[in-house]
Image (cartoon, rainbow, N blue to C red):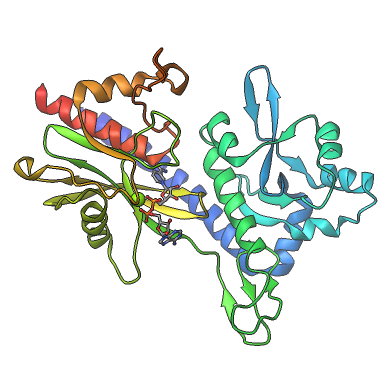
Length: 341
Ligand SMILES: NC(=O)c1ccc[n+]([C@@H]2O[C@H](COP(=O)([O-])OP(=O)(O)OC[C@H]3O[C@@H](n4cnc5c(N)ncnc54)[C@H](O)[C@@H]3O)[C@@H](O)[C@H]2O)c1
Ligand SMILES: [Mg+2]
């Protein structure tokens, strides 16, 4: 019996090892592409491309499903020829990843070319990122979000903030340099905490005035300079709803492209049930209130479309599964249900 277990263990370990080495090799290759301009230039000729137009990704619709097509360098050249443009455009692409087989992936914004011509040529449409993220397959949305964020960062870092001189990018697009000052700029993300506050039996959700009607989410806020995650959670909860966090724990994180490249750091926090009276900051929030388990479970089932009632009011619904707020809410439901069992 022990021999069978040992053989199974060896098989699982060797499988893990093989998986691991695929991952390690892929990351090393990507790192080489980032650093080595000539290798990356060569990779552009064999890579695949995600297209954008003024930061809106190109999607194709088949039946009810949306796909994010990967175009070859030859297809990109064919489109550029239609516009009598040279293939030098390809150099404006940014590296966003590669397949397990080391086929590099790039994102390219053709915003300066006529949108409708590209759309009819490739039989699809450039779609606002806010919509695109929620209609494409779950595995594609992080890729679209990071590609768009990197393109957006290049758009807004064309000049050195010290000298005002133009900055030059490397081939992969992983950095920009000002040759006058010697300053190297790297793509930036802003750390944001998102916290689901609970008093043990209820959780606190809030609405910002900009949210779609009926939608409630967990509390969120940008980290201040010099602050750690714990301090940011304590401060944001105090600022936005006037409560003092007693304990907190990390859940997970997510890159979020709105308004521009946030690193969302998701936490659960506990406040004392005896000191759970909300004092809402009206400058930031429109509403903040406690929700019981049953109301949360019902809200998770509700579609935004079905939340409107006959009298014009809206029943609560929560962010979709692509948003980390959704994951925090589901985790809280799980904790509560296991406590009740
Ligand atoms: N993925 C999710 O589940 C999820 C859920 C909630 C919020 N979010 C994101 O978190 C972000 C921050 O949340 P919030 O609006 O509650 O933050 P917040 O409570 O800190 O308030 C926003 C305000 O903070 C100021 N601010 C400070 N630093 C900033 C910076 N680096 N960039 C922009 N503004 C800055 C601005 O005045 C801004 O209006 C939002 O942009 C939102 O898109 C994501
Ligand atoms: Mg906030």
